[in-house]
Length: 245
Ligand SMILES: NC(=O)c1ccc[n+]([C@@H]2O[C@H](COP(=O)([O-])OP(=O)(O)OC[C@H]3O[C@@H](n4cnc5c(N)ncnc54)[C@H](O)[C@@H]3O)[C@@H](O)[C@H]2O)c1
Image (cartoon, rainbow, N blue to C red; front, top):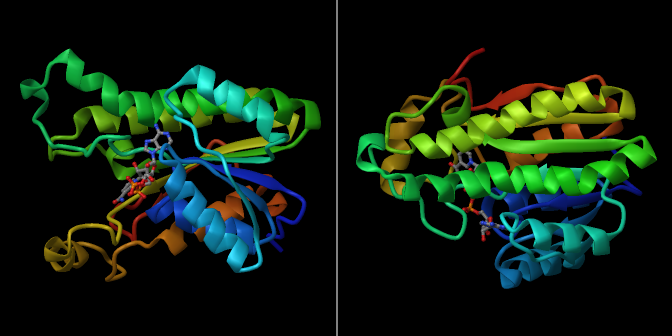
């Protein structure tokens, strides 16, 4: 089960943390992984790790917010069977909390460009090929900020995350008969939080631990597999039980 041999998976923002965990998990299951990142050296490092472990991977550096760059890169990569839209957070910038009323419209574009526009660009680039081949898996890494909102100064990030999971629902409906599924994975608190806040945050999680890149990789593997073909248009909450649905 969950064998991805013969499949090619593009993982955006795969150069570190969660994206790297997803890339490594899909490669272990037999996929050839195209590791995207804005920062080429990060993608190359993860590719080297995968190849050293016996997997197949190629670096595919480009900026998901740049439509022309996405189209040019995808045209040169060959068929993409699985797209994991993972690039997100603040994109090239650190995410700085700011109360919505203290922001101005110039502050809104950045979080939405990477968390929503980047997903639109990548889906738009790979979908025609998936339709032609009658098969595709699209997975978008979203957040509880997108499903439930967040009150700590990241309102426009939550807009981007909510918009991208809505896109998955519509793509699922438009492409259900093309053999393509589109789902989201909405993450809760992950183990990349600052160490000084980890203990307090862990207390709010019913299973008693923070999430890891391996947790996300395992869910993506299931959603990337042939066996998940009847799962589409869904938002899978991956949060240790912190939010029930
Ligand atoms: N870490 C968390 O607690 C958490 C919680 C909920 C959701 N998420 C989501 O999970 C995903 C991964 O999170 P992470 O913490 O591993 O992120 P991260 O910021 O540690 O890594 C993201 C990677 O994406 C790359 N990237 C940024 N902008 C890019 C662009 N425009 N084009 C291509 N690559 C780009 C970065 O260079 C980086 O290597 C994101 O979508 C994030 O919003 C994370």
